[in-house]
Amino acid sequence: MAVKITDEYIDLLNQAVARELQVSVQYMLQHAKMEKLIRKALPENILLDKTTYDAVGKFLKDFAIQEMKHAGSIMERIYYLGGEATTKATKPTIGNSLSEFAKLGVTAEEEALVLYRKLIEAAVKIGDYETYELFEKIYSDEEAHLFKFQEYTSMQDEYENPSQYVSEWRKVFTDDYFELLNKAAASEISAIVQYTNQHEKASLLTMRKKDTPLEVITEQNKAKVISELLKTIFMQEMEHLEKITERIYLLEGETTSIPAPLPVVGGSTTEFISLGHKAENDAIVLYRKIIEEALKKGDTTTRKIFEEIVMQEEEHYWKFDDYLK
Ligand SMILES: [Fe+2]
Ligand SMILES: [Fe+2]
Ligand SMILES: [Fe+2]
Ligand SMILES: [Fe+2]
Image 1 (cartoon, protein in one colour):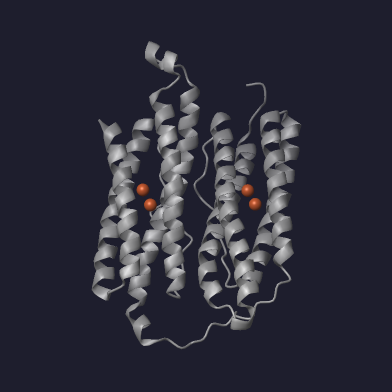
Image 2: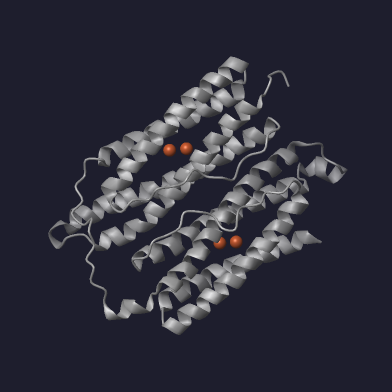
C-alpha cells in the first residue's frame, strides 16, 4: 500500500463508526417513539400534527438506514486498510418530543461534521484519496441531515409532559415486562451491529483470490454469498428493532439503546456463520419466552409482533445452519 496507515488514523475512522452507529440507533428509536407522540396530538391540531409527525417519522427511519450504511462503508474501508472496525457505538440520546429529537439531531450532525472535516484533512495529508472521497460523500449527507433537523428545532411541543394517570389495563405492564421487552431490543441492536460489521469484513474476503474454476466463472465465492446473506438479515433486524421499540414506547415504557449481548465479529466466514447461528438461537429462545409472557398478560399485540419476528429469526437460524456444515 502506498499510503502509511497509523493506529491513530484507524482510531479516527473508528470514532466515525461509533458516531454512525450511535445516530443510526438514535434515529430509529426516535422514529419508533413517533407513533406514541402522534397519539398525543391535540384535537385542534390533529391534522397539522399528524402530517408533521408522519413526515418526521419517515425521514428519521430513512436517516437511520442511511447512517447504518455510512457505518458499513467506513467499516469496509477500515478492513481494507488492515484495521479492525469497532462495534462500539457512542451512546445515543433519544429525547421525548419532536423538538428534542431535532435538537439532538442538530448536535449529533454538527459533531459529525467537525469530526469528518478532521478526517478528510487527515486522509488528504497521507494521500488516502479513497477515504477522502468516501467522507466527502458522507459529509454532504450529514449536512443534508443537519439542515433537515434545523427546520424542526424551533417547533413547540405542547405534549412534553404526559399525564401521570395510569389506567387499569396498563397495570399489567410491569417493570419486569419492560425489562424483558428491552432484552429483545438490545439483542436486535447487537445483531444489527454484528451483522453489519461482518457483512463488510466478508466483502473484503470476497475480493481475495477465487479458489476453484467454478468460483472464477461465477464470480461467486463463499464469502460473497455470506456477505450478501448478512446484509439481507441485518436489514430485517432493523425492522425488528423498529417494531419492538415502537411497541415499548406505545406502552409508555423506555427503551434501551445499548446492545446486549455485546456484538462479536469473528475473523472468518466460518466464524460469522457460527456466531450468527448462536445469536439467532438465543433470540428465538428469548422471544419464545416473551410470547409466553405476553400470552399470560393477555397482551395480544405484543404476542403477535413477536410471533412474526420469531418466524423470521427461525429463517435466519436455518440459513446459518445450512452453511454450518
Ligand atoms: Fe452518517
Ligand atoms: Fe447524519
Ligand atoms: Fe431480529
Ligand atoms: Fe435474526
